[in-house]
Image 1 (cartoon, rainbow, N blue to C red):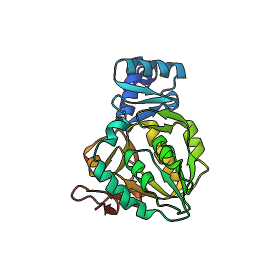
Image 2: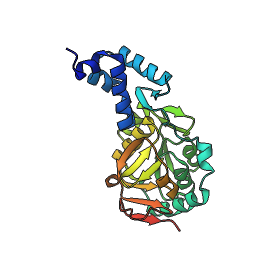
Image 3: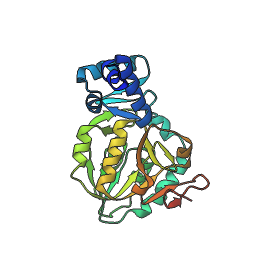
Image 4: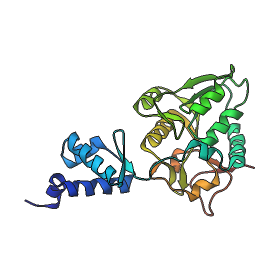
Length: 253
């Protein structure tokens, strides 16, 4: 038989076409899922991913593949952009910090500004995988700091991967401040699989999620949808597109 389904499993070109479709549709595909869906071995999947990555069609990452352009802009580049807006957003966001509670800070340049502005002597516990935030908070004796490790990403200056997800699994926080690579009317987007999975795990351990992002993020794009607006309580920003109704908005002064 030479049905389309059979070709998809047995023909390398058809397998690679199927992989590309998955990456284009979802932004990321796990190697383990490809083994199951295509009915081939891990070695076959690894060869296909290496070939597609070598042709510049995808980007091979640990455990799977993502879009070829799915990389986060370097932290140093992002930290120099919209600095005034980020500080204003952070100042507005810290008003949602409740004394005596646990707070989680996602990695990012806006959440780093929040780390700098956390109120003194409020009895806070702060959980974060952001190395710059850890460095800012480590000297403060009034804060109980839980730093989450894992595989270090130099572009984002944060930790990610299975070790990070495992460390977060049994934690709980009152408020999560969630960063974003891009935003649109349907939700929050991330640049890499590690980043997106870490954000989702943070959302799962938080009683409420506050998205913090400057208005430029509505003009940017990223390949992986982290969550819809139903996962967030509010968005703190300096501006939104006309007609935006995804979630209650707090505009920073």
